[in-house]
Image (cartoon, rainbow, N blue to C red):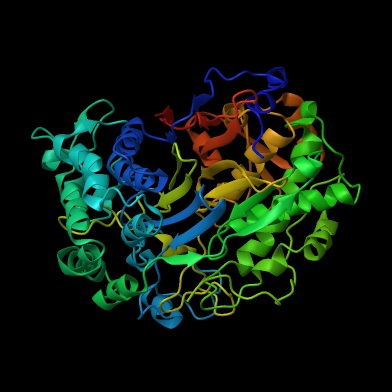
Length: 592
């Protein structure tokens, strides 16, 4: 059963630097996201009778308006949904595919890559990085499959449409789109005194995006067909082709026909670190998402404890050098496998269950050395006895409702504004998710027609092992930081006995080679967030890690997370949602 509120909020003295932000509680529902006005969109839908999924789609649209550098309808989405009536988790993969003409040879030729170069990449601002946007279909399919049935898309998208038409105070401005798209002006603030009559909005200024509002109206009135055919589809294809890309109308129509893909979520049971029978089960999307990296890292930590190679850490060991060394090394091993095996299971067979089997994880745990940092690891050789688990810059947010449902939702452009390419008159940028394809002919994740790339966005959910009830809906956005963040904030709650807000506010680490901008493999570098104890930094350095202390705006590399815990009052037995929101973002957790 869910833990009681007194269990979750015990021992606050363990956290050395107490957060000034308190956990938010509600019995009716919570929206936890990075932008206040986007949260307002979700709360409006909840008040109108919508459920967690209806509200999540409203939040996604609101974030497209208020944080377009991170997310939008020109990107992809993934959803995990806890349905209270069935006590089960459902998954929806809303990621798009490469175009039908995007062969490896065609892309290498377009990019003028020599035949003998195997380490080449698709540039993130290239039209060849544009895959078919899956978010529009994902929003519609999520509401159709898991919504309350009380609200249609018109009602759900109305709050975001009103933001775009009436305007809203801007949180921050960025003008990278100016240099990348011929249609850049429509996503900037109109100012007659500015060069060209437009400029990036400044914090606190009113920003409008009527063209995006028009796109949302089309989606609301015509459904996903209005996005993948007609004016929007034509403008999307026209701008990509004008810049040399290979996407065609037929590729968008193919996605319309295929729709978003319901998948069977994968999970790992964790009884380690003293949790025992009160352990948890972490749930993720199967590949093409990288959630399996989080499962593997957590599983390796569990195997190391079984083998007696790491201790059962005490609460006071949280964020100590030995504690973080175990996490860092487990992540390095997991990424070595993830970087090779994670791809589209509908095109290439992926050994998903083999990668998270106890036998394989115990084998991979042998690479761990408690006394020194490890060198670069090659991928392993997991059993391929499991079938592909599928039927026929980024924002993470989570929403819960009064009925006990929870939506763990990620929507993303990938890096920054994505490619920064804007279809004319549409008001959004196109993602650059195709940059995650390999251009190595021998790599499982090589680019191929109608194939989905390695995906970094991973919503997470946790259930209680004792009875299968919901423990929490959570996630940490931030490219390849996402599985790293998930492991750290989950173990912070288990080992450090931290509440959701404390777990999110605690300093984090990010391993080298785990950032999309690095261009390198997994190395001995560890980025450590300011606020980490000096003893920990010295200890990691002594173990051989190349430690870089990160401060200021660069701390964005550590991601932005949200957690909503499911607890019960110990006397009344009443359901309580208890939430935290990352201090690295502009938002918070907002109760209904």
